[in-house]
Length: 344
Image 1 (spheres, rainbow, N blue to C red):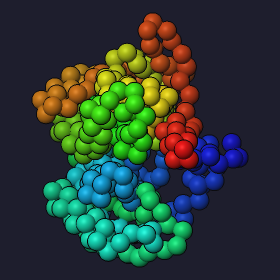
Image 2: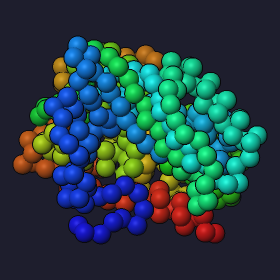
Image 3: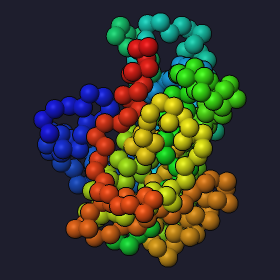
């Protein structure tokens, strides 16, 4: 594939051809390099490891400045938490839109500070400025880091026979953001009370708690945050990275009613849509029930939704008694609908 996608993440084929072969000077201390299906990188510090992840600093202003700042921190910290190591430090580059006021920046940063304190994260360095051409929701970028013991690190490696565990179900982020940005279609179809319920899905858009609970339960072999291209894209990346296939039982995946109805309203396939907050994990089959029990004990809905199979068997989804081959969605339907409704 020689073309870039219209929107969203670069397709794996382009990444593998252009980005992955050019990562600067090789260094043996780098235990985990950039790769599909892995949300973080790892540097060997001797007895300990440094885990880090970089993403846009995402401020969805329609959520409200404080809520948007909460989300921005959790997006970043979630990608470190899926390593089994708790997030601890942040470096942030704020390239702010010219229309952002001093009052808005003050409110946003107060919320960032508050949430970092809640998560025991320290801001160690950064850059802050307003620039022409910058706009919401991408107002910069940031890196979250964590330091921990090698024995606690979960370097993703899905094994044949591992159970596939999914928390919260699909399209968490797609639901929260579409409801925040475009409430009128939902209100016209389902009423005001539904809009409030859909907007409240926002508070599910974090996998920090999910990941740390799953890791502590034991037996987890890989974890991934279902961001762009959602559950289908995330599982495809995990399988590709580990050289396995997967049999996925779509009917066993929890689908929240508010998510189902929101996706129907905007004509979005929930299983292929961005879903920050959905934890994709694999665990040894004998340990999976303990992971499920630990998550459910903390009120996090989850289920076992399939298993890893030998690579030659491929990727397949089973639903309503039918079987179909799973391919990477390539383009997240959320971005297509987001652009479409932004122009209306």
